Length: 344
Image (tube, rainbow, N blue to C red):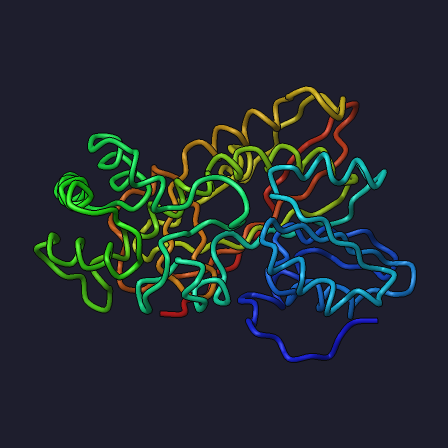
């Protein structure tokens, strides 16, 4: 059964997320961002013998944690995969259209930030990696070594909202001509020497690190992929809860479905595979998001570009809940609630 080992990371908005999922003892639930198992543990604690939890994460450290904490619980299963593969993994379990709740907690976790070997943080020196799955794809150092100055400036501006994006890009390219930019503190020092102003309470490299992390891990691509898949995987009445870090001053324009953002309903085909009206609405919203990742707790993301505004000093976590309901011959997505909590 569920391990009672202490959590290495206490999930934010845990109670609100579980309430939003409308748990029932025999339900099927997917924790699509397992991390270190905080949400999964709470889900299992709320379920009865017939309940099931399927967890996904692409981080091999998460896979090890899942085996250690929940390997003896027959109600739990884990697949090492990015959440952009949600539909594939759920279909392999025979759960397509039968899932009662799906939870996403976006961004990088505290254990990832705290391990200097992972290269996510400038607080301690380590290899400039930043991959959620360090066994796949290019590290941040490799990515920086080949990206051109114009594209790097674009990434810093769009994913980090860095005011001095072109200046930072120019400095990074100049530095790599002398030697590869290979460590976290090396990159942080380049940015600190380049950015002329300081935001109170923020390291000058915060925006650069978040932007590079988002690009290296294709975080927006994963988000765009998972949202329509999640809707198709849910049973009628099922809940999709998304926890996301947002910056203060963003105007609260967050959110993931065009229907949801309007607190309306979008009906479409219930074919279980082809894009429908809901997919299109969600994909448009997913494609219109930006990520902000300076927070240790959820450092995740998404708010609509329409929100505008620079990242403020007070940051929040946003919980968005979508309910799938039967509407005649189609499936509808209805935005049901949101809750926020400020944490710094």
